[in-house]
Image: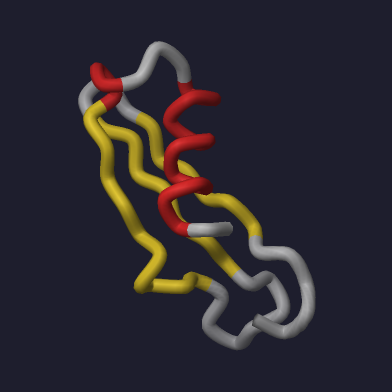
Length: 59
């Protein structure tokens, strides 16, 4: 990372929620190794899924 906070990206559908981190200042902003997918049925809300992702990745 270039010293800035990473951006949280999300692609949320009816079956899965995909999360990733990005560095807006980088030439290739998507941090490909940060991509994770979770079944939406496992979480009561989008906020809970995002919180889980952030805790799991240490972001």
